[in-house]
Length: 155
Image (tube, rainbow, N blue to C red):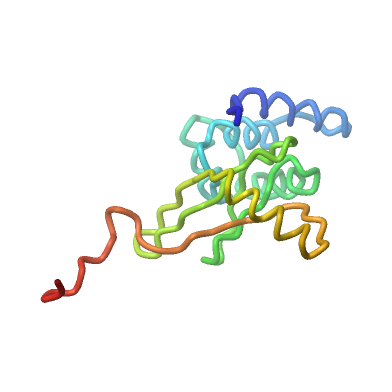
């Protein structure tokens, strides 16, 4: 499994935008470059805050618009983790991607990859004669910091 360099994805995404005749200006470029640096998905608000934090001058509305366009062009995928907040991450053309662990307590989201899981999903899809375009696996629970202690008196 090869790892992607953020800059590769950002560069390709910006090229695709140019190919679509879209300007690589302002918010769109900022969103692409910011997302390319993230280890995992980010909400629009987090992306906006991140760009502003690096001194970028974008409006929240432009960030939302840029994300919508990027999702439409399949450059970015929208990730729904069940908390009502849409998050976004780079969509890699070769299908190499990760899934998410969500802590229901502190809300932390962590990426994980599992080739065995990928295979199982593909086998399941083909067994059901289903042409799978994509899939999103979200594991809910408690991260190491939030795992509840075992009930007293057990053992």
